[in-house]
Image (cartoon, rainbow, N blue to C red; front, top):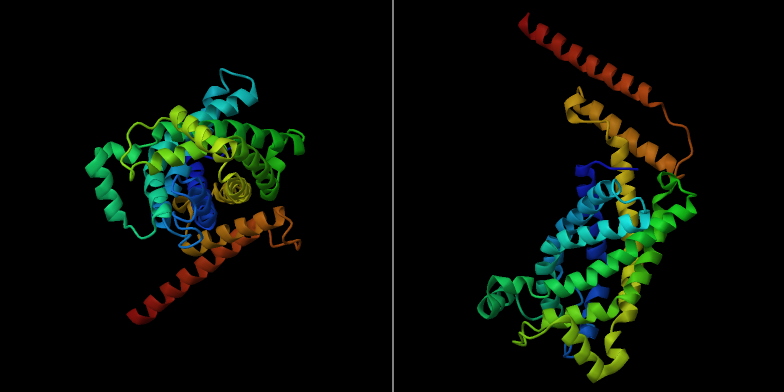
Length: 331
């Protein structure tokens, strides 16, 4: 199923916002486990919704940009490369690069709030500006790309592969929950493998408030290895895997469900609808079709054409009533 560009943007924004808002507490716990200050010093289990304002603002546009770029890249790259696995890897890398333009400033605010819940957004903003200028909002951009590109290069080809395997090559016939299950397994796998990169990214972003400017991905990983060993590199691995496993299920499930819903309403546009009632009728018919496809309802509803005819008839009756009322007042 290929969605149009507006639908891809809407579906990506919806899916990203839902998963980030629902699973924010797990992300907070993971961030505090990875902080160099330690879990308890960073807040422990208190104020686990700290940083959610920045998530509410940034998650939707970053996810929308990712899926828009990912779907567009698949169409373009597949014309030149005929290996699906490579196409998905390249497309995912392009998608993450574009999405990080919005995601990184959001992450900087979010993680500083998660590890210091008492500080305000204004104080974080002023601190970043005074120490690093506007470039401070993109502190950790390189480390975020180093984490997110490998993550997506693993996750999305696996997601596409699992879908292909369970559908025997007919992915358009899959239910949203099946796509969600594939996304959950792919997300958990990618999350575990890329945990060290996530730890490095977190340390670099949090170094803003420590006044350190010499952090790089390699030096950060070496420092963690020397001081805390393998346990330090995989700090927060369990909540990260759980978070992205559940997140993968919610994210891909929401994306596919909403994409399926919009594909049913795709032929319907306000320009071609004769009345508000007719639009509501066609929209409700699309919902019924989607529910029948998912097996949620089994009874046979009135056909689409009959519902359209009924709506037009009701509209005509209303117009006649208005016309008769006008004639009565005139007499």
